Length: 144
Image (cartoon, rainbow, N blue to C red; front, side, top):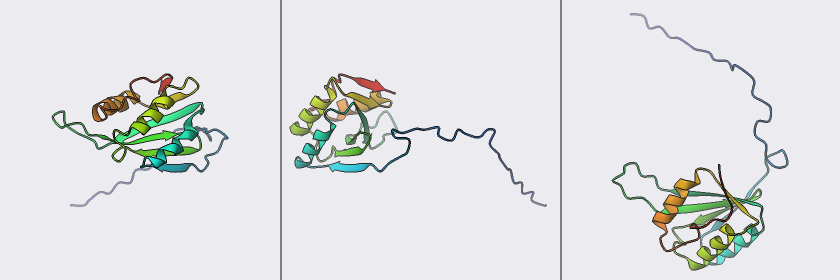
């Protein structure tokens, strides 16, 4: 019995636009990453105050079945157009100083907090950080 080997070739139906994603300034630039893992590190978040937009995302260990307990948020990422702050929520869980900083940030009238599918992030924050309240009220939220 002969084996038939077939090679498919694909070609694009159309050519994508040259610049289909545009960042401020037109070109991607280097972004500084700041790790926030101690009480002393929290002061680095001062640079977020007064920013017109702050992106937010959370990360947690996935769970795959409803009978499994939800897991704790392990990282909160806050970003501007030049800096990303990675907050270690395992190390800073229930830290009052961090809670106060984030509460003030999330309630600034001049700052829009930007998330993507942020409802899931909020559910995780509520479930895994019951002693923190920074996420319970956000003055300006844009959920994409």
